[in-house]
Image 1: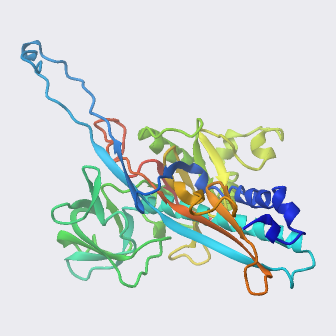
Image 2 (image 1 turned 180 degrees about the vertical axis):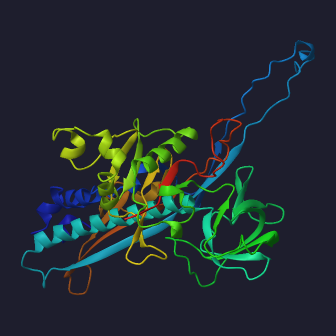
Image 3 (image 1 turned 120 degrees about the horizontal axis):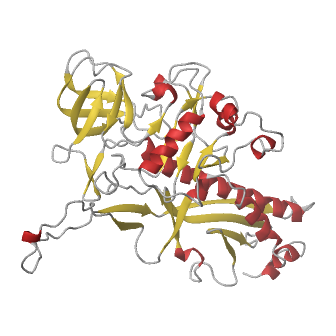
Length: 440
């Protein structure tokens, strides 16, 4: 396929790079979540799933070596190993296309051609950003849910709103299904129980974004008081979720529980407890415009900036930047959902991320010559392929403008970071982000 096969009106656009620029500008609309991902190339010829292993740390040594034990070839030392954990990125294929009929679009064909490219670029950017968002949030919802149906008598099984974070446990860095062999400690109501099975419902009724409703079965009976509807159910390895006023569940949020500076600082403190590295000196906070606006109504926030003049960038720009260890990035892709029980109110979810919170795997062969011959009009822009096909229909009238991406996202765990290696660390499996839930 060559440029000469395209209409004369389009050839200068293609030759001078206008088409590629239109696609690239739309791709760089910066929706947010994909920006936090660390990019990794997914090599050709290794299958559809890439599993990587990351080394953990060894415990601190605070006990001196006894002189009497410093003998023999081992000097009285016992060899220590370090833990490992694995994360998996799965390749998937995403694509979309749009046709341009050169006859019916004869008037203004060049501008429509460029508009199609810009629209495709925006669609690709938004699609990848939502994939990144879904992969980032899923594990940070994990291990936090609530009872949805009250027990009428003590029994081992309860119905919950979301079983994510309860279906697997990490064993030597590898996820294994929860079972009697690999149980999980769970706190529910005022009791502590041993989980031995988690089963998603066939018909999903979860109210959480991307959630999976289901049943949790324990090794012993759950009391009626602990199994009451609305009670919080939390795994010992649950991700940290910060809620104003200490609400234990999403449904427990009240109309007055808006975003506060205190909640943001709690999120930053949790990341620092877990020694999560910063991103260029601060943590990224992704939030929607309503969440951002609520900060300016928070008394602590207003007191901090009391007496600030109009030249202060916080007020001049209407947005906080690099503030108290946080870089605020507004996005329209943030999760917003109706409150489970309070009509007319929405639950909003800012998320504070450190370095390594998300990994993006891009297929290295996306632009290979055996996939895209050198005379084909295929441009790789930010790991996304833009494809322009000459008219090959019977009437030679229809040009196809398409895009595709081959790759995947995953949020890696940090199970080897424990109080034995980092004394302030939490017990969460996933430590590199903290989600905040509030009303807005």
